[in-house]
Image (cartoon, rainbow, N blue to C red; front, side, top):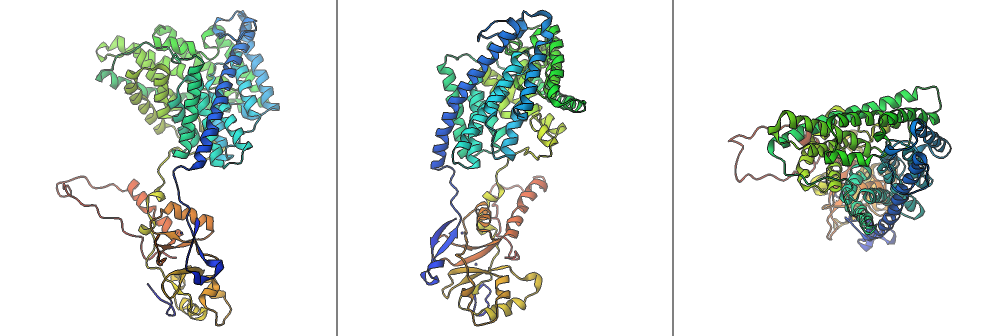
Length: 632
């Protein structure tokens, strides 16, 4: 250690230190322990389970409401029995029914909440990222009601987006009514969204993965546990209600051969291109609507003209169309019917969604992707029978791959397709195809269908999640050593003289103060030493607060958080066990320098393995401590 004036040269709870410091300074401020879970997680988990119960009821009510509106609009009867607008009995009035529904949605958006426009998930993402997960309470009513009207009057949307948004709004509402943190409110929002999806499709694992990939933006036990409990609760409620069948009907398929797997991976890549095209088309249509000399309230009605016209020609494009997905996966549609359904469903859905009405994207994408997959699968089976391609598996891969490419929710797409069809032999083709779609989409498109809207508003959305680099490095490996300390009983004048003798650029900014035994007493800054009026003051008289320190075995993440909490730019490093002697000094510069290894690992290309570098008993040297040149 360097010494000044026989002075010496070294973490948020509080721990006692030497009593000689006086009653005001008898504690050290140290970083709070970072536990993976605590009792708050138990509380949030209980709240998430409660949200799941309400989300299940909301999903059931929304499904029933869609059925009621569909029966009224297309069959002229008051009933909550499931009904498909494809079998309508209104004749040419099918041209105007969607327009009437879109007018109502436009009015609700203008005078209720503009946030009901769109398919729900991007809007929930926006609240998570930029509004501390605070969804306006009125959205819990307006979003499902507007979606039910849009879908019930023939809108070619899925109910899953609005249900996910409604469940998220319920979780957010509870989080706003209670005294909890923004992180806990985000967890409840994601739990409600996952519960809504799980209640609708009976896909709890996929719901958790979707929440992680699109809403939580993290993978931590304190958030994943409540979300998983909420999703499983909603799935259990669905089973208790007697809904035990898979969401989509599909006969059992055989294991895929090697050549067939290669085809399914290539199919996934093709669907990645389709996802890119669909995303760009939707936002191009949205830009076209924005150039219209009309208030946006009228745009859904204009988009509904396309819904009615396409629905008049192809009634099967109207409404949610889950029966279309069943037909595609079961191989009941001929090639011509698949081409017509895929093309016309895309035209109707893209124009309607681009107009800014309310509805989901998952079911339409599944219909379009499943149709394209089946088309390519049937073609391959006819032209190259030796590949062993099953058109039903190709349809399954197609519907999941287009969603993976469009949303960038890779694992959620794979598991969702599996859970909703319960086809274990489809998992391997799904994983290969969805990965290829994800790769192609990521290479060719910067933003997903979920994040493009946010990016156009100037928001920066995370595209990947990685482990916290600072959490992986201990303080002892990054702190500057040795630390220049000052003796508590030394004079201020001697310390000032020492500082003035140093070159301006080499002066440290903070100094641990130690007693005669070398134990930490406090911290003073260069400014305090240089600006103190001349006199016989001792260095200990400049100490104004208990010292904030960090343990040598703490992580840099804990240290960085502690700096923010304490409002300091440097921390003395001490041992967790007494005596509390200063081992080094950790500064903001040390934290920045710690990222050098991360950047090098990502950018530096290592030499190829050769006989000279290969060995069975190589020893990897430990990482060296931070350089002594770091400023404190």
